[in-house]
Length: 499
Image (cartoon, rainbow, N blue to C red; front, side):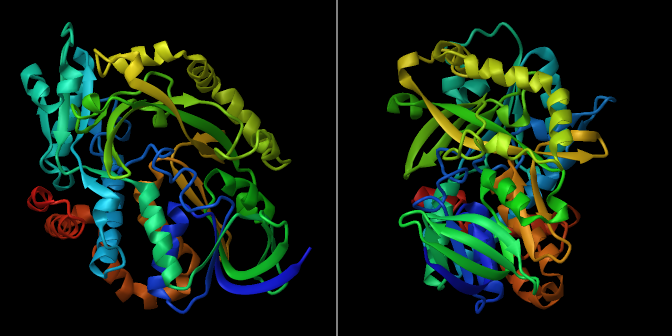
C-alpha cells in the first residue's frame, strides 16, 4: 500500500453538478489555485446529476404548484416561487458568461426552450390555479404566463393530454413559453471537460474513505484508488463535499460540530419512459399536476418532454420508491450506517413524525406497472402499456434535523453545512438542487471565503450581472438579463427558428 502525500488548495469530492459549478466559479475567481476532484465512479455526472436520474430539468418555479401555497385567507403566496426563479436566473447568467467567454461552445448541448405548464382538474383546483395565475402573471419574473379553462385552447396546447379525455369535471392549465429543459448530466460533463483544460486534476474511480483535520487547520483526506487499491493522503486548505447522497457520511467523518444531530432519509424515484416515437412527437412541454395528499414534494406528477442525447424523450413520474441506499450505486447499509449517537434521537423523532410518508412510500413501492399506467392515464388518457417502460431514477437524501418546528424535522430542499472557519462545507438535500446550483455555490463562496469576497466582487459581477441585487426590486434589470441570457444560450425564438 502506497501512502503518498499530496498538497493542494481545494478538494472537491464528487463529480456532480455542484462540484462542477463550484470548480468552474473558483477557476474564474482565482485561476492559480490548485484544485483536485475525486469521484468514485468512472465518469462525471453519473449519480443525481445524470439526465436519466435527475427529475429537476430547469426548475424555475413556472409550473411547480408545490412552490405556491394557498394561505388561510384564500390568497396565494408566491414568495417561494420568486426566490427559486431568481436563483434560476442566476444560473442562466453564469452559463451565459461561460458561453460568451467561449468556455462552452454549444449551449444547445444542455439547454433548450420548452413551454412550462401547470394542469389541474376539479372546481376547487381550477379556482386555485386561476388565483395563482393572477398572483404570478402581474410579476415581471413570470411575464407572458397564460391561463385557460377552455378545452379547445387546451387541445391546441397539449393535444396528447386532451385527446380522448372525458370532460366530466372542470379542467384548466397555465402556460409560459419562456421555460427551458436543462440536461444537467450533459452540463456536468461539459464543465468537467472545461476544468480539465484549466489544469484541474480530476481523478475518477477514487473513493474518499476518511477525512480529518490536521494540527495546522487543514484537512487531510484518505483517498483510495478503486482500480488498484493504493491509498494516498491529500491535504487541502478547503474541502467541498458535493457527493450527493454520499455527502452525509463524509460530513459525519469530518467531526465538525455543525454536522452533528443531522440525519438523512433516502427516497428513490421511478419514471415511466415512452418508447414510441410517434407518441413522443405529440407532446412538447413540461406539464406539472398536483401532488397526491401525503406525498413528498418531489413526487409532484409531471409529463415531461426532455432532450437527452440531442433527441426528444417523454417521461412521466416520478413515482416515489424506497431504498436504504444513499446513492444509486451505494450500499444497502447506508441508512443504518448514518445513525450515530448524536443523531439517533433526531432520526427516531423523524420516523415517528412521518408515519404517513412512510406508508405512502410503501404503497408506491408496491405499485404494479398497470397501477402506474392508471396514474399516467390521468395525464394521457389513451396511454398504452406497451408504449411505456419503467426507469429507476436517482436517490435523493432528504435532510433530517432539529429545527424551531421540533426535533427530527424532515427538510425539503438543499442545504449547505459548513464549519465556523469556512474550511469545509457539505451540500445536503435534494430538489430544486441542480437548477439553483450557481446560487447555492455563490452562497457557499460568501460563507467560506469572507476575506476574499470583497476583492472578488468585480469578477463576480462580470460572471453574474445581477450579483448583489434583488431582481424583484429591479424589473428593468429582469428584462435586460432575460434578453441577454436568451441570446447567449440560444433560447430566443428567432434563434430557434434558425437552428
